[in-house]
Image 1 (cartoon, rainbow, N blue to C red):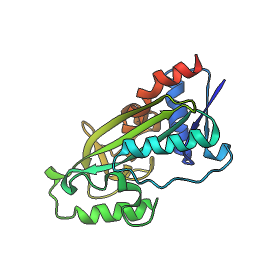
Image 2: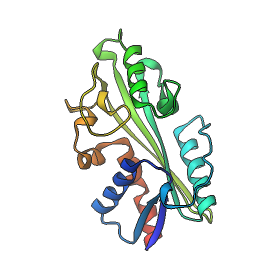
Image 3: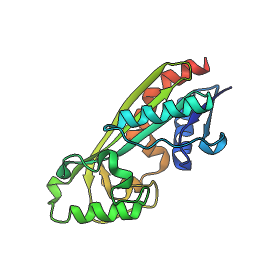
Length: 201
């Protein structure tokens, strides 16, 4: 069994990656999180792109633990805000990880934006770095529109206001397994599966 570190303490991200691996029948991989390894300093997310941030986090994790490491950086790119909050999504309101404050700020900023101009995309870059050097990074995007009031109890972040193209439900109203097959993170992580299969083989 090959241990692979997902450089996150987000239990929902860990569960998501484990579900994707199980659904694709990738055997021989044990996914562990940051709470399962000795702690090491978190590097600040200073990259200008999702790919830069994901690679930096995965490199730090692989160097600190000696394990093949996956990291992702994701966010919401809003058309009417010229692609913002983008890489600043988790700290858009000024405090990192305050989902409610971030949601409230985005909704306030879009108050006067008509429904037909409320397009957005969730974007995720997922990187896999092996301690001996090989690296890969893949990008997934999920287009949709933003509604004016929060709906749904699943997911996290901006999920309660994002309605995927072709649906009427927010991503917070989708069942977790359904979201895995559609979402930006699911798409990016799925593109890493061949590299994970190589590790297990």
